[in-house]
Length: 164
Image 1 (cartoon, rainbow, N blue to C red):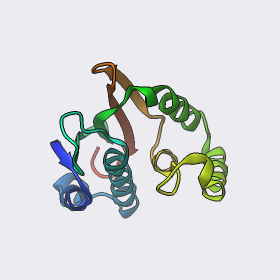
Image 2 (tube, rainbow, N blue to C red; image 1 turned 90 degrees about the horizontal axis):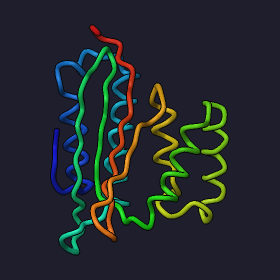
Image 3 (tube, one colour; image 1 turned 60 degrees about the horizontal axis):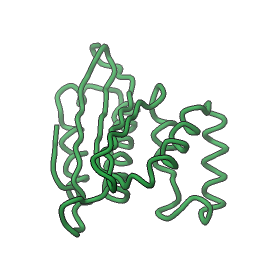
């Protein structure tokens, strides 16, 4: 678990740390790549879309928790978002959650072609990529902090192969 301010340098360090964990070292290369990809996407979402309530800073406060349960790796993140964005984010997550692999592939292509419709940073490919690498739907929640901010929590599961 890590709780604090995130930037790209820290993301790289966390990924290296996770890849070096004894449980993860023994995993199949595909599982390692999926985990690394999901962790990077989750933490980049904090850096790009998270809000710093207390100060105007490049660092974005958030948290990540990685745990293993019944052979699956559970990756949980949390960060603050503007409350005004919650409804649109819920709709987007529900849309991605409702797609099968074929739908995700087609939506990925559509977002790449129509980036002006979906936002900056290569659109909203992060959630699509996470959905394609994980083995089930995301779980998420929003808790209102105040009139301006809400706390966003998000969990995704990656199926492991080594000694469940």
